[in-house]
Each structure stands twice: as structure tokens, then as C-alpha cells.
Length: 490
Image 1 (spheres, rainbow, N blue to C red):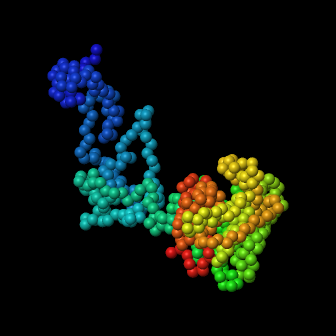
Image 2: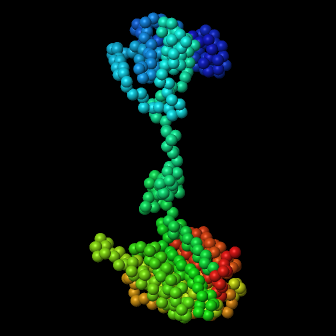
């Protein structure tokens, strides 16, 4: 049975103990669980002496207070490096490997060897030894050797900061701000990491984040007309487009124009198709109306021009169809409105819509267009109610569109003569999916939409985003009757 170690105090609560105690009388600590002091000793002492194996405790020689005579202390090399600030260097102490053999010493660096790579930039290294008054050079590190080659005892263990490091510090002459470097190189800076440069494909070279596209959110106000388009919350790009403007009729009265297009996602390049169609239709209207063309005829011709613009996008090299023979041609829907002092004209192909919302909300609102869609055909044929048809998963399958692979193009146009002021809402299904009926649309259109069309368009886009934003959202607001270009949102 092993003898318990003799303890003067409890290891747990430090209560004084008596000889022979097995448990602490204060806390109950089991004194027999205290391990005994180990009997083995290290084979190498900290001062470098090697005692005999199994030497009793306390048999190690005390380290000398003064280094033994004859020890060679390192001095500054020819290039001023190689000094040390401590009294001992690791290489001054003898060492052995696991087998007891002496460790080989590293060969000294040849004269004229370059200094270490890590160089401080905040001050220059002390490369020269400074002579003292008695002519002895000052050792590297700043202490003066005493007679016999030993440094002063007070300076032996003085802690000083070294002049060389293993890792090189950054050069302050080089800018550490990558954003500044990217901006200086004429590139855009990533909006996510604020450090990388954006490449030509729209991705950050540092973190790979896709940058916001210009079309992800668009707003425009042209006189009394305004439009807003947003990518939504589910799509990776905005495939909608719009064009708004104003002109004067031959009699000098004002005319407002708004075109909204929705790219067909199942087709190729739907974003290009919607942009080309909206631009072509707007330009055709703004050119035809001042010449005296009737607004309804001008709208018909504008839709034809938009169709030609989209068809031209399908003109691909013959090899393109060989690599992707089943790709659909670029396609989109279109809806537009022309508002004069007494006439309201709408035109459309597809399922984008136009609504009439009077300023006096006691008067009934109205939907001005009929969809070219599967649901509309079911309702027109009397096979389903409108609620049943639009609840079906096939409801938004369009039966008319602009594109090279479309059926025979049939532009729809309609003319109205409202007897009271109001606002025309021209939008894609990304909005009317959340306000389908005319009275639902009237409830979400702000009361001051005719006076503040841009703010109201933002409100409508926000309504769609709050509802889920499952699709791109685009809306244009055109007050009726048309007002001069000087009027608009205050």
C-alpha cells in the first residue's frame, strides 16, 4: 500500500491538516486522492548541465550568476548584422538528440551575406556599431561590453524591440485600399465586398458577387407621365421595359405616350425583346402624332414597328440554330396608351394590361384591355368563370405575343372618350397579379396619382413587392386629360 503524501493544508480549501488525516475536516476532501510527487527528473537542466540519471531532487547545479570564462559572445558581423540583445543565444547552449548525441551546429553565414528579408519600415536598422568614448565598439542591441567581453548585468536582460522580423511589414508607400486601386484603374467597385473590381461580365473579381444591373430598378418621369420598373424578388433579372414621353399634335394640344413591354421568359433574350419593342413603339408614336396621324392608327402602326424590331433579334447565324435548335425566338408582350385632351387610345398584344381609374373614386374604374391568354379564351368561350380560369395553372399561357415565331400578328386597339379626369394605369402582370379586378386596382392607386404620378408608380410597385414580387413589376401612369410637358410631380 503506497504511503500517502504528507500535506500541511487541504489542497481544496487550504484548511490546516494534522498528521495521519485521510479526509479534510472542513470540506471532506479525500486526501488519499492527492497524487504523490513524481520521482523522475528531467534529463537536461535549464542551464545546460546534464545530471546523472536518477539524480535526487535538488542535486542539480545552480546556474552560475556570471557566465563561465572563455565563452565567446557574438559580435556584429562585417555588415553590421548578426548581433543579439540577450545574454545567451540558443546556439550557445549544448543540446543532444533523442539518442544522446550532440546536435550539429548550423554553419555561420558567409561574410557579406544579405540580411534577413523582414525589414522594418518605421525606422532604419542599426547597421553600424557606434564607438564609445574608450574606443570599444557598441555591441548590436545597444549595450556596451564590459571588460572580459561580458555585457553589463543590468543590460543583459534588458528587453528591446528587434530590428528584423520573420514576416515583412507592408510597405506604406503602396496603397492598402483595394477600392481606391479599382477606382484608380477606372473600374467599378463591388457593392458587396467593397474591395474587388467588377469585370466586364458584371461579377466581382474578389468575391464573385453579381452586381446589380442597371435595369434591376428603373424610374423615369417625363412631364405629367411617370413609370417605374423593378426586377421583383424572385427573378434574377428584369425582363420588362418601358418608354414614356410627350409631344404636341398639329393643333398644338399636348399628347402623352406610355409603352410597357414584358419579355417572355421561355424565349431567348426576353430582356432584349422588351427593350427593342418599347423603344420602337415609342419612337413610332412620337413621330406619327405630330404629323397628324390619328392616335388609334398611330398606335396600330407602333405595334407593327415593335413587332419588326423584335423579329430582327431572331436574325442569328445559321450555326446558332445547329448548337441550340430548340430555342425559341426572342418574344415579348406590349401594351400602350396615348392620351390627348379628349381622347384615350390603348393598344396591346399579350397579357399586359391598361386600367382606367377616375379621380372621383365614386365613379367606377374599368379594365381597358382583354388578355391574349388561355384564361381569357376560356372565359370568352363560356367554359369557365373568370375566377376559375385565372386560378388554373394554365391561366398565364399567352396566345399572342411579338416575335418571329408568333402566330399571325393581330394588334388590338381601342378608343375611349372619358367624361371626367382620371389616370391610366399601364402595367405588366407583375402588378395586376396582385390587383386583378378594376376595383382592386383602384383601391391601391393613390388618390393623388394624377398630380403625383411618379410617387404613385412607386407605391404600386411596392404593393406588388409586398405581395410577394414573384415577377418583374412595371407600371406607367398617364393622367387624363393630357397636360403640357411642364406639369408633373411636385
